[in-house]
Length: 189
Figure 1: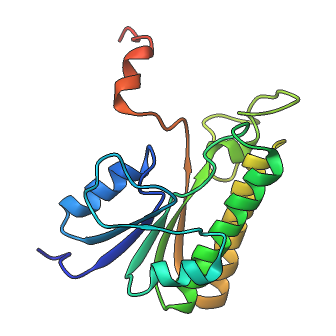
Figure 2 (figure 1 turned 45 degrees about the vertical axis):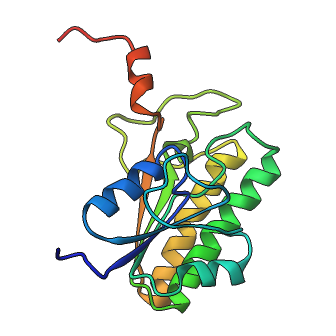
Figure 3 (figure 1 turned 90 degrees about the horizontal axis):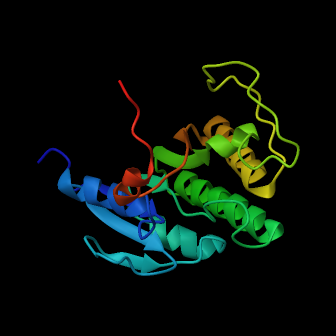
Protein backbone atom coordinates (compact mmCIF):
# COMPACT_ATOMS: atom_id res chain seq x y z
CA UNK A 1 0.00 0.00 0.00
CA UNK A 2 1.18 3.51 -0.82
CA UNK A 3 0.52 4.75 2.73
CA UNK A 4 2.31 1.92 4.51
CA UNK A 5 4.95 3.23 6.87
CA UNK A 6 3.35 6.67 7.15
CA UNK A 7 2.24 7.52 10.66
CA UNK A 8 -0.75 9.70 11.49
CA UNK A 9 -1.58 10.78 15.03
CA UNK A 10 -5.29 11.41 15.62
CA UNK A 11 -5.99 13.32 18.81
CA UNK A 12 -9.44 12.65 20.20
CA UNK A 13 -9.55 9.36 18.32
CA UNK A 14 -11.81 7.84 20.97
CA UNK A 15 -14.48 10.47 20.38
CA UNK A 16 -17.59 10.59 18.24
CA UNK A 17 -15.83 11.87 15.12
CA UNK A 18 -12.32 10.69 15.95
CA UNK A 19 -13.22 7.01 16.02
CA UNK A 20 -14.38 7.26 12.38
CA UNK A 21 -11.24 9.16 11.35
CA UNK A 22 -9.00 6.55 13.00
CA UNK A 23 -10.87 3.75 11.17
CA UNK A 24 -10.54 5.55 7.85
CA UNK A 25 -6.77 6.02 8.16
CA UNK A 26 -6.29 2.40 9.27
CA UNK A 27 -8.34 1.23 6.25
CA UNK A 28 -6.11 3.35 3.99
CA UNK A 29 -3.00 1.57 5.29
CA UNK A 30 -1.58 4.23 7.59
CA UNK A 31 0.05 3.51 10.91
CA UNK A 32 -2.32 5.29 13.31
CA UNK A 33 -1.86 6.36 16.90
CA UNK A 34 -4.98 7.45 18.76
CA UNK A 35 -4.15 10.07 21.40
CA UNK A 36 -6.94 10.69 23.88
CA UNK A 37 -7.81 10.91 27.58
CA UNK A 38 -9.68 7.59 27.41
CA UNK A 39 -9.61 4.29 25.58
CA UNK A 40 -11.91 3.92 22.56
CA UNK A 41 -15.01 1.73 22.66
CA UNK A 42 -13.71 -0.18 19.64
CA UNK A 43 -9.90 -0.22 19.51
CA UNK A 44 -8.65 -0.35 15.91
CA UNK A 45 -5.22 1.18 16.56
CA UNK A 46 -2.93 1.72 19.53
CA UNK A 47 -4.14 4.37 21.98
CA UNK A 48 -1.92 6.57 24.12
CA UNK A 49 -3.50 8.35 27.09
CA UNK A 50 -2.19 11.93 27.00
CA UNK A 51 -2.98 15.30 28.55
CA UNK A 52 -2.58 17.62 25.55
CA UNK A 53 -2.49 20.63 27.87
CA UNK A 54 1.00 19.37 28.82
CA UNK A 55 3.50 20.30 26.09
CA UNK A 56 5.97 17.57 27.06
CA UNK A 57 3.34 14.84 26.80
CA UNK A 58 2.21 16.32 23.47
CA UNK A 59 5.75 16.21 22.06
CA UNK A 60 6.04 12.58 23.15
CA UNK A 61 2.73 11.64 21.56
CA UNK A 62 3.57 13.23 18.20
CA UNK A 63 7.16 11.95 17.95
CA UNK A 64 7.71 10.06 14.70
CA UNK A 65 4.45 11.19 13.07
CA UNK A 66 4.18 12.30 9.46
CA UNK A 67 0.90 14.14 10.06
CA UNK A 68 -1.54 14.98 12.84
CA UNK A 69 -5.32 15.30 12.88
CA UNK A 70 -6.27 17.27 15.99
CA UNK A 71 -9.86 16.53 17.00
CA UNK A 72 -9.42 16.44 20.79
CA UNK A 73 -11.45 19.16 22.51
CA UNK A 74 -14.33 19.96 24.76
CA UNK A 75 -16.80 19.49 21.87
CA UNK A 76 -19.44 22.08 22.64
CA UNK A 77 -20.47 24.91 24.93
CA UNK A 78 -22.09 24.10 28.25
CA UNK A 79 -20.42 20.75 28.99
CA UNK A 80 -17.95 22.18 31.51
CA UNK A 81 -17.46 25.72 32.85
CA UNK A 82 -16.64 28.23 30.08
CA UNK A 83 -13.09 28.89 31.27
CA UNK A 84 -12.32 25.15 31.26
CA UNK A 85 -13.60 24.85 27.68
CA UNK A 86 -11.48 27.79 26.55
CA UNK A 87 -8.32 26.66 28.37
CA UNK A 88 -8.54 23.06 27.16
CA UNK A 89 -9.33 23.85 23.54
CA UNK A 90 -6.82 26.68 23.16
CA UNK A 91 -3.92 25.05 25.00
CA UNK A 92 -4.33 21.65 23.38
CA UNK A 93 -4.40 23.22 19.90
CA UNK A 94 -1.38 25.38 20.69
CA UNK A 95 0.56 22.43 22.10
CA UNK A 96 -0.28 20.12 19.19
CA UNK A 97 0.86 22.71 16.64
CA UNK A 98 3.94 23.67 18.70
CA UNK A 99 5.00 20.04 18.98
CA UNK A 100 4.21 19.30 15.33
CA UNK A 101 6.24 22.31 14.20
CA UNK A 102 9.11 21.49 16.56
CA UNK A 103 9.20 17.88 15.36
CA UNK A 104 9.17 18.87 11.69
CA UNK A 105 5.69 17.51 10.95
CA UNK A 106 4.59 19.24 7.75
CA UNK A 107 0.82 18.54 7.71
CA UNK A 108 -1.90 19.06 10.28
CA UNK A 109 -5.67 19.20 10.34
CA UNK A 110 -7.46 20.88 13.22
CA UNK A 111 -11.13 20.83 14.12
CA UNK A 112 -12.61 24.28 14.14
CA UNK A 113 -16.37 24.73 14.26
CA UNK A 114 -19.39 26.38 12.73
CA UNK A 115 -19.73 27.80 16.25
CA UNK A 116 -16.89 30.19 15.43
CA UNK A 117 -19.45 32.24 13.44
CA UNK A 118 -21.28 32.88 16.71
CA UNK A 119 -24.75 31.86 15.62
CA UNK A 120 -25.00 28.48 17.38
CA UNK A 121 -24.61 29.45 21.04
CA UNK A 122 -25.41 33.17 20.79
CA UNK A 123 -26.58 34.85 23.98
CA UNK A 124 -28.04 37.56 21.74
CA UNK A 125 -29.32 35.58 18.72
CA UNK A 126 -28.62 36.79 15.21
CA UNK A 127 -28.65 35.41 11.70
CA UNK A 128 -25.94 35.12 9.11
CA UNK A 129 -24.86 38.27 7.28
CA UNK A 130 -25.25 36.39 3.99
CA UNK A 131 -25.94 32.93 2.65
CA UNK A 132 -24.49 30.66 1.65
CA UNK A 133 -21.99 31.28 4.42
CA UNK A 134 -18.34 30.76 3.58
CA UNK A 135 -14.97 31.09 5.31
CA UNK A 136 -15.00 34.86 4.72
CA UNK A 137 -18.14 35.28 6.86
CA UNK A 138 -17.34 37.22 10.06
CA UNK A 139 -16.64 35.10 13.12
CA UNK A 140 -18.61 36.68 15.97
CA UNK A 141 -18.80 34.17 18.85
CA UNK A 142 -20.43 35.10 22.14
CA UNK A 143 -19.26 32.01 24.04
CA UNK A 144 -15.96 30.47 25.11
CA UNK A 145 -16.32 27.44 22.82
CA UNK A 146 -16.73 29.49 19.63
CA UNK A 147 -13.97 31.85 20.76
CA UNK A 148 -11.64 28.91 21.40
CA UNK A 149 -12.15 27.80 17.80
CA UNK A 150 -11.38 31.28 16.44
CA UNK A 151 -8.21 31.33 18.55
CA UNK A 152 -7.33 27.85 17.23
CA UNK A 153 -7.57 29.06 13.63
CA UNK A 154 -5.40 32.10 14.42
CA UNK A 155 -2.92 29.81 16.17
CA UNK A 156 -2.74 27.66 13.04
CA UNK A 157 -2.07 30.76 10.94
CA UNK A 158 0.77 31.77 13.26
CA UNK A 159 2.44 28.36 13.12
CA UNK A 160 2.17 28.33 9.34
CA UNK A 161 3.90 31.72 9.17
CA UNK A 162 6.58 30.60 11.63
CA UNK A 163 7.40 27.09 10.44
CA UNK A 164 5.63 26.57 7.14
CA UNK A 165 3.47 23.74 8.51
CA UNK A 166 0.40 23.24 6.35
CA UNK A 167 -2.66 23.42 8.61
CA UNK A 168 -6.21 22.86 7.42
CA UNK A 169 -8.87 24.16 9.82
CA UNK A 170 -12.21 22.42 9.26
CA UNK A 171 -15.26 24.33 10.51
CA UNK A 172 -17.26 21.26 11.42
CA UNK A 173 -20.92 21.42 12.33
CA UNK A 174 -23.31 19.25 14.30
CA UNK A 175 -21.22 16.08 14.46
CA UNK A 176 -23.52 13.18 15.32
CA UNK A 177 -23.27 9.41 14.93
CA UNK A 178 -25.06 7.78 11.98
CA UNK A 179 -27.71 6.18 14.20
CA UNK A 180 -28.94 9.65 15.17
CA UNK A 181 -29.71 10.54 11.53
CA UNK A 182 -33.07 8.77 11.82
CA UNK A 183 -34.13 11.47 14.32
CA UNK A 184 -34.02 14.08 11.55
CA UNK A 185 -37.23 14.59 9.57
CA UNK A 186 -37.13 13.42 5.98
CA UNK A 187 -37.39 16.11 3.37
CA UNK A 188 -39.62 15.58 0.36
CA UNK A 189 -37.57 15.86 -2.80
